[in-house]
Amino acid sequence: MKTRPAAPLNALRTFEAAARHLSFNGAASELFVTPAAVSHQVKHLEEHLGVSLFQRNHRSVTLTPEGVELAATVGELLGQLDLALDRARNRAPAVLRVTTMESFAAKWLVPRLHRFQQAFPDARVRIDTSDEHADFLRGGFDVGIRYGAGKYAGVRADLLMQAPAFPVCSPALLGASPHGLEHPDDLRHYTLLHDEGATGRPGVPAWSDWLAAAGATKVNPASGPVFASIHLAQEAAVSGQGVALGLAPLVYDDLRQGRLVKPLGVGLENAYAFWLIRRDVSQQRPEVEAFCHWLRQEQRQLSGAPC
Image 1 (tube, one colour):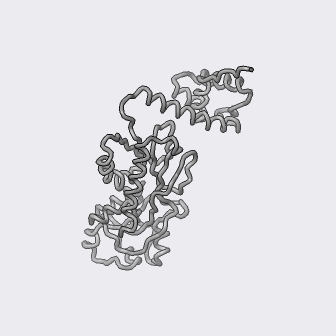
Image 2 (cartoon, helix red, strand yellow):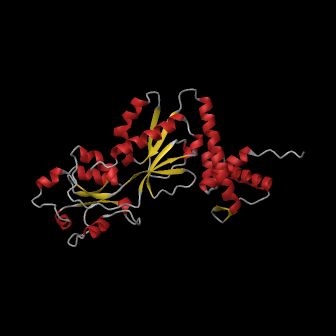
C-alpha cells in the first residue's frame, strides 16, 4: 500500500494566514516571519499539492478556486486544533464565551445574566461585544447573538426574537413640551434621533420608513442628529434629547421601568431580527446548551408582554 506524503503543517498554517489576510505581508506580521518566508511556504504547499493557490498580481494576491476551497477547510481544522490545545493546557473549568453587540449586551443580556449564574453557579461566562461577524473557530466563541437577516455562513443560526420598531422618548420630554404627541405629524415639534446602522438596509426601519407607514406628511425625516448605533440613539432618548425609533427587545426594560414611553402606537415590522448563532450543535458542551436553553426561556417570558 502506497503511503500518502505527510501534510506540510507549517506550510498549511502559513497558507491559512495568507488566505485570511489576502496578503503575504499581513501573514508575515501575524506569524513573525518575513514576507519572503511566507511566499516560500506557500510555494512549497503549491508544489506539494500540484495546484496554484494564489493568483499573484503586481501588488496583491487573490485566491484561486482551489485556494478558496482549501482555505475554508484548513481554517476550520486549525480553529478546532487551537481550541483543543487550549483546553488541553488549561485544566480550569472552560469559559463559556459569548459574542454579541454592545447594544444587546447592555440593554438585554447583562441585566438578566445574574439569573443564569444563579441557575448555573459553576459556569464561567465571558461576554465579548462587537458588531462584526465573529469567527467562531479562531475566536473561540461558543454562542453568538447578532442583529441581522439571519444569513451567516458556516454556523447554525436560529431566530431568537423579532425586532419591530416604534417611536420612544422620555416621559420628561413629553411633560416639558408645550406640544402633544398624539398624531405622527406631531413629531415635527420634536427632535428625531437617528440610528446610522438603519440607513440603506432594505427592510430595516428608518425614520423615513416609519413616517411613511404612519401617514405623517408634515415631518422632515432627515432632521435631527445621527448616532453610530441604535444603542446611542436610544440612550439619547432616555436622557430626553428627542424621539428615537426603538427596537422592541432593546427598549423593553426601559419601557417597563418608566425611563421611556411609547407615545404613538404604530409599530413597523423589521427585516432584521436577533439570531442565536452556534457551531454544529453536535460539538457543543453541556454548559453551551444550558445557556442557549436559558436564552430561549428568557425570550419566552417576554413573548406577548406589552412594550
